[in-house]
Length: 143
Image 1 (cartoon, rainbow, N blue to C red):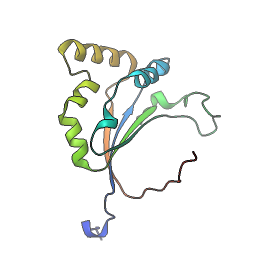
Image 2 (cartoon, rainbow, N blue to C red; image 1 turned 30 degrees about the vertical axis):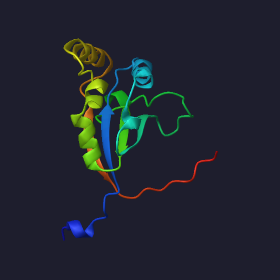
Image 3 (cartoon, helix red, strand yellow; image 1 turned 90 degrees about the vertical axis):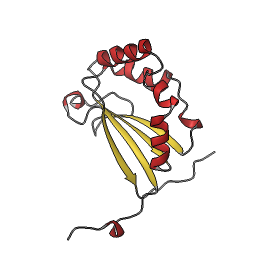
């Protein structure tokens, strides 16, 4: 039997993800770009948090590098998660200036620069996927 909307858990968050396949040898440049970029996400209504993750092999030690097969896997070797309170908050970000700034859309020069830089680092375009957040579990952080 097919589940109905009433059978499913209610969304408690909205998650936007992007999978990236970074060219071998360009991983540090990719990570630095994310670490150094300015972002207004934290000031936006409904934004909860952002997380960039690097794929590693199961038996790797902490921060030992990347999974050697990750750059050939269709799922890529990096993924970003942006967690929003509601889908409408994500949609407002996409329609606003903060999205344009984050994606090089403030001018033609900025856009072209972003596209050229991305082409040199990435193998293909990012692959977006969107999710309903259903069950969150966490612990209180130590101070």
